[in-house]
Image (cartoon, rainbow, N blue to C red; front, side, top):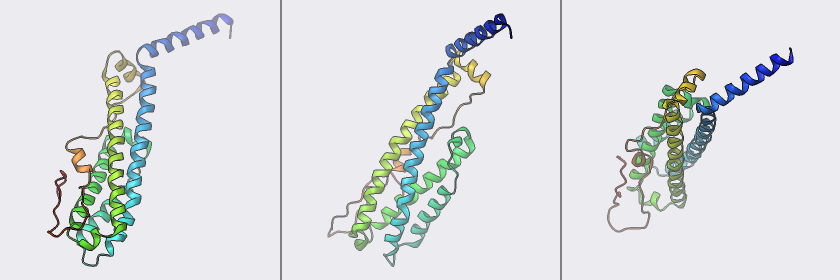
Length: 214
C-alpha cells in the first residue's frame, strides 16, 4: 500500500467518524449502554422478588385453612415469570418484552391478592416471619418501581434519538431500531402491594385502599 493511498484511507476514516459522530452515533452508543444498565437493574429487582416468594409460600402454607386458590395463583405466576429467559437481548424483541411484562404483572397481582386475603387470618397476621416477608416484598416493589422508571426514561431517550433528525439517518444506515418499553397504565398501583396493618384489632380486619384489585 502506497503512502498516498494510506493517507486517503485515513482521511476517509476520519471523515466517516466525524460524520457519524455528528449524526448521533455517539449518542446511540451511550444511550444503548444506559438502557442495558437500567434493564440489568430491573431484572435484579424482579429476581429478588422471585427469591422471596418461596419463603412467603412456605409461611402461608402453615395456615391450614388458607385460601388455596390464592396461594396457588402466586406459585403459578412466579413459575411462569421465571420460565422466561430474561436476557439482555430481550429489550430488542417487542413481543418477548410484552410477554415478560405481562408475566411480572401477573406476579404483582397475585401477591396483592394474597396479602389482602391474609387480612382474614389473625394468626397469620401475627406471624413474625410473615410480617418480615411482607415488609421485604414492599421494599422490593418500591425498588422495582424505581428501576422501571429509570429504564423507561433510558428507553424514551434512546427512541427519541432513533426518530430525530439527523440521528435517524444513522439509525437507518446502521440498523438501530426503537426499543420496547414498559406500559405505564396504572402501573404503580398494580405493582405496589397493599399496606397491611398487622397490629391486633378488636374489629374485623379492614383492607386499606391501595389501588390494587383483589
